Image (cartoon, rainbow, N blue to C red; front, top):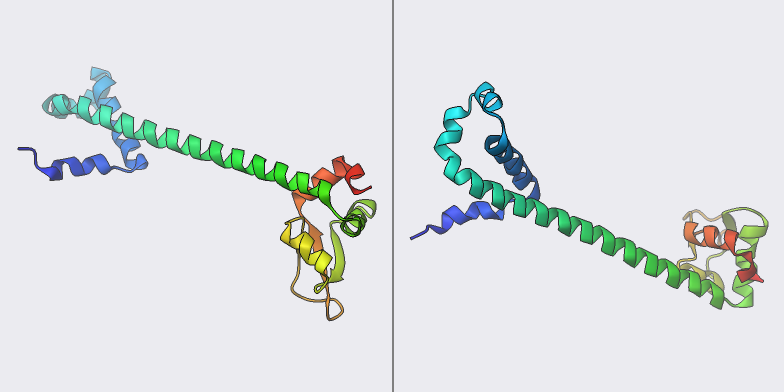
Length: 164
């Protein structure tokens, strides 16, 4: 009966599987001259029946790990794009007071404006992730600097009509 300890090596990480894949590829597909130069000719012949199994399993683990990473990256990019579109759409639903405050960034070509930290309109823009408080040091007791988020800056630079 097969001892479960022999199956433990199937739990390889992607990095370890890649190393095994490369080594087994050299041993399986390398030229006689290369294998002889490495001094592995006898070793290759002794373990040749298992090399194919190691090669296939390590290839499968490496491929699965790579595919997983690609899908994870694509999913993250899609989520980022959907979130960006949602945030940009929110800029079209601003109150006149919010538009007036944000237009100060565009008309003055600055990424920083000062405002009172207890202003509800300012805190609403912070909660909507349109602006953020850039420093915890006040200028005049309750006045703090607020920067516009890079995504909002870029969008409003391209579409200033949103603030009209």
